[in-house]
Length: 182
Image (cartoon, rainbow, N blue to C red):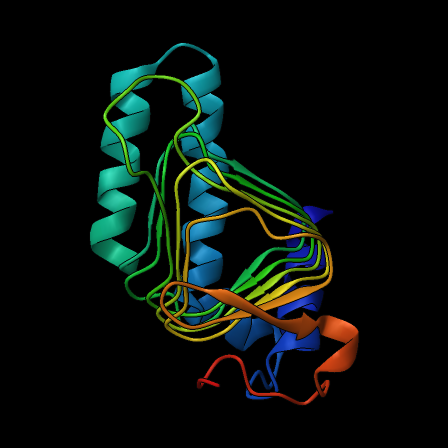
């Protein structure tokens, strides 16, 4: 069952999570992701206005804005959640960890692919912005407040404004606190 999978993912990535019941009842990031699944199903069924209205209601309740057309993978964790924005053409892979204040946004008004593609097992630090139709490769890490506007190869560690590669994820200490900043 996906609900159990989601709860296990939070327990694995959030040391403050004390119980499954606490996660189910009190984690706004999880609530936003669960609600997104419903909005996304409505969107795919062609019920665009109900999908958008549902997404707006969820945004008001959780502080997380996920466009119903966005594609979100399995076991994604949005930690704290407040201020997260995920655009319509964004694709988020499996096992991604997203901290508060993250934007996966567009930089053009043209139609088509306008938002990022985030690979599997990526960590995106607090306040980071990944803007435009860029790809952040699997197993990468984006530091807090980084602004990513170019593709990043798998295993990258990205920091700064504009973001630059600090080195491969293998070269940077595992306990580097990307949620709080670099």
